Length: 465
Ligand code: ARG
Image 1 (tube, rainbow, N blue to C red):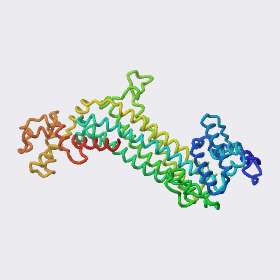
Image 2 (image 1 turned 60 degrees about the vertical axis):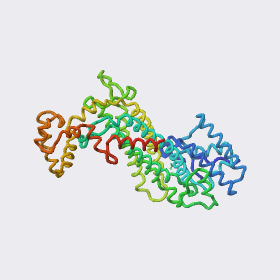
Image 3 (image 1 turned 45 degrees about the vertical axis):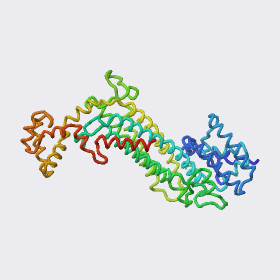
Image 4 (image 1 turned 90 degrees about the vertical axis):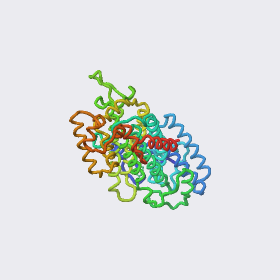
């Protein structure tokens, strides 16, 4: 067997180079510190490539057998933590190829036939991201299920609904939770859609223009379970819009998480007191002995910032790059990896925390009774008695003013007082002014009436089965 050219990479890339890379340049350009995480995808991709090369008669059957044997050994070495990653071999691809050649000789040197690291890395990242997406989809379902199951216990728990963070109208706590289920369900749809565009094979594009070998790209795509190949070699090696889309999904999802986290923090504040969290999701204070802080929710809210930052970073990374591959693209990995890790951990912890949330139904109901949440119901009542809505609105404003002056709720005003605002008001108004009367009245598709909410819970349960 002849010498392994990769052994001398520290000295020079090829015979063309007359001096070695400086230690600083080596460190600056290397990615093996982080991209070794792609090792399994890299080996899977290489094996599919090698099998295709053999089937096409480009390498021999013995070469393929050697490559398969060498790769099996490398998998074992990496899994056992025995593999030595070398900075001077720059990245995951060259590290694995060098070790393969060390183990099996010339067959290892034939593996890179008809391939470039440009189509190789694009393939690895897509394979890796696809499997991460497949891990995230069930977590999004868990998150939804946790919310749906909590909602099922609270279709009759009334809380104030807010606009402008001012008490607006009564809603059930279940209805409020289900709003997030809708959001996470759209996130899951978005992610499944992103997966379709991740799942295309770049391999065969080689450096940028395709290759002169008679490759069977469709075969490689099938073996790696891609839905098809990237149809333009220049696009295949250079664009990372699949990663941008993923980061877009992740940012939107984290914004949804962040809004929920913000509400949990507010709800747990003594000034609101709607919920309590299990101790295991809270931390204490080093100085104030009475404190239990909702750190997990706060961090989930905070981590949305870093995921949105990664999206901005990746967009900025792409925007100035001329076709085709540029080394800039090596910078796509750390933000992408961190995005996946952050979304995964956040979804897991939030689903658990929501599942263990203690709901203080009485405090919610008491809060709904402050702030004249049923004023709209009184206006609607008057409309049904024949008043034009604008007049009804004005009449109720007068009633609310008097109630505020007396420090009571509308439902606590005597019938005679209410009739003073409009003679059509009858004793049936008190049912209308009650929290549950208000809820039941909103029996429109998508509304907060328990019947609607129960139907939606049933639909979600069926979908999430
Ligand atoms: N480590 C490189 C990356 O992540 C692999 C591709 C290198 N290709 C090249 N022509 N230098 O993008």
